Every structure is written in structure tokens, then in C-alpha cells.
Length: 453
Image 1 (cartoon, rainbow, N blue to C red):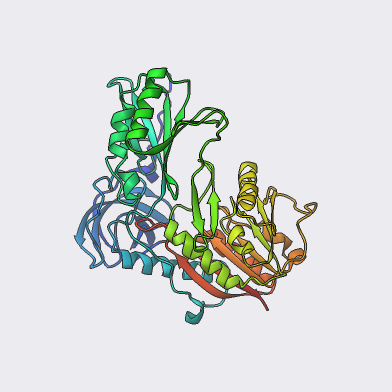
Image 2 (image 1 turned 90 degrees about the vertical axis):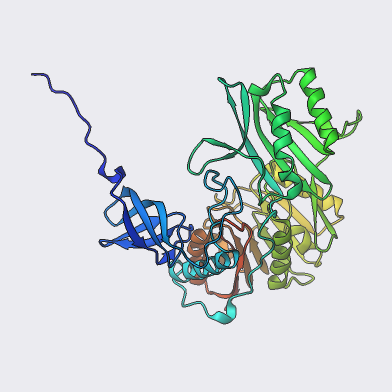
């Protein structure tokens, strides 16, 4: 008799019966934590002190994940989400929490993670810096909108991706995006749907810079002349720098119209009380919260106390966000970045700001640095790595021997891991500060000052 394979149901993914749980705290990703039959249960969308009806969506040996069905007893910190797209869009995940409660949670999570994961002693209250905070809404000066062409309806969707999904959520406005950019979303979607080549359009990057608003439209093929005229008219109406970016990353400026020898207009922002201008190419990494970035740079300089004649190393320097203001303090600044295009832009920024005491280098900071000419004894070190952290770079501490290290992090877990390297090399944490770069989300940006004992 023939036997046919029949897959066994995956019990770990099966939905359970609904049950009521009490939420005790949030994890560092913003999910609520509850206990059930000896398991830790993670539940997005709930707050400490609440009782909620939930349903398991995944069960493992020591933990489970559940989805929220209903709030039975609400926390005093619960607020109505401001955005109509909140429950579909994957951008924000803490809009249901009062902003002050958000910041208290982030501060506590930061201190707890550093204490536990870095094997440091309990963090003393006197070394916890005042959090750097700003506006809770309309703080974001940059966003990338995704597009999706529906072959059935012949319509182009413009919006953000849903949480943990490739699905596009069409949006009409975004309350965390700069108001002038948020106001562009609906008319831009209408405009793009008028184009003949709308099926070949990619993402749209919107940026609010000190020299105006910029839109960069990704295109996969050459647009017809009628589409170019349509986009140019839209840009002129909204006084918008409008650029096209092709598959090779090349930029073509549609508006304002360039003369024969003109170069593409780049967005820029100012730092150090307007005394430094920092230009960047669309696609380059820049901090998205202008007010918080200004305060963060100021605090880094205050903590480092750069002096004339000192040698300061800035790793993961980008286009010079910290390097250029540091150079104003008459120290010698060596700045290193892994993206060649950003290094070139940083060099040009130094020229534009007439700063000859800062040198920019390209290097893979996760690789062997032993042959790098810039690596050697320094007075102070600044690190602003991506989420993966700076573990490999910190293996060269013995060669650098900085007296002070300021570590700027967008991932408390990698920061805590890297802190253990610094502590093992004789450094002590003397300042810890929350940087609330991303209100309404669980993301935690932090700054830590380490000093050699």
C-alpha cells in the first residue's frame, strides 16, 4: 500500500485559546512582558500595569510570543495613537504610550542593558546625564517612501512598509515627518500616478535640508519627455529640488534647471551654531533628527573637551558630522569611514569649511587595521558605528590608548557588548546619556563617556 507523507502541524506557530495576562514591563524592543506557566511572553502593543486578552502566535521552550486581542485594564500611560496609519505602518511602535513614559522606559532600558551585558557594576545615578530630547512630532527630516505598482488597478501605491512585511501601506501624511515633507505625500502620490512610466518607478526619498526640500525618485528606465515635463512642473509648483536616480546611482536634476557647467545641487545642514556646513549626497547616511543631532554633537564635544594640539580620532565619521565641529576646536582630527563616496564628500566638506586640521580616510573598520597609516597613539576617540557596533575597531585600543572615548550608539545591545572591551582595557564609564532620536518608536540612541583610569 502506498504511503503518503503528511506534514505534522507546527505547534510552535499554532494559535492558542485566548487568555488574560498581566503585563509587568517592556523589553528593550518595546514589547510587553508577561508570565504564563513558567514562560516569558512577549506581547507588542501593551504597557506595564495593564491586563490584556492575548493569543499565542509562537511558543518555544522558554518563551512565547502573543498578539494583542483587547486591553482589559489600561495603563495611565496609554494614549490614543496620533497617526491614522499606526496599526498598519511599520514605522512607529510606541505611539500608544505617553511620550514622557516612553523616555523613562528608554532611559531605564539603556542603563539596565549596559549594567547587565557589559558586566559593569551598577550604574550610579550621578553619572546618568540628562536625556537629550526634542519635539515628539514632526521631527524627522528624511524618509524613504516605498512604491508598489498594482497591475490590476494600474495604480501606484506610495507609503511605508507594514511591520515585519513587504506589504506597502499607502499613507496620506506622517506625523513624525517634517510638516513640509508630510504635506507633499498626497500630492506626490497623485502626481506619480499621472506618469506613463509609473510601473517603472522605485522608492522616493524626501529630505528637508537647510537649502530647501529635496525629492529623489528612483527610476529603472529612462522616462519619456512628457513624464519629465510633468515632474518638473510639480517640482516648480512646490519649490522642490527634484532629482532622478538611475540603476547606477547617477543623479539627474530636473528642478531647478541646471546650466551647462552646473553640478547637481546637494542638500546640506549646519552645525556648531551655523559655523559648519555639512553637505551630503542623497543616499548618504545622516542623522534624521536635526535638533537632536545638534544637541548630540554639542554634548560629544563637551564630554571630549578637545584641546589645541590634541590628536582626536573619529571612527565611522560619515560626511563629517562630528569631525568638522571637532576641528573647530583646533585639535588635529583624523576621521575614518567605510563608504568611499562619503569619504569624498567629507573631504569636500572640509574644503568648503576651510578646515585644514581634519583628515579623512577610507577603511573597512571591521577588518585588519594594522597597516593603516592613521592608526597610532591618540588623545581621544569618538565612535558612531552602525547597529553592528565597533567590536573589531576596539581591538586596537592598546595601540591607540585614548584618555577619553565617547561612544554614540543606535543599538544598546552592541554598545553593552563593546563596553565590556573598554572596561577590560582599564576604562571606566563616567557618563551615560539617552539620546531620544526616534520618539514614538522603541529605538534607543545613547552616548557613553569612558575615561582611562
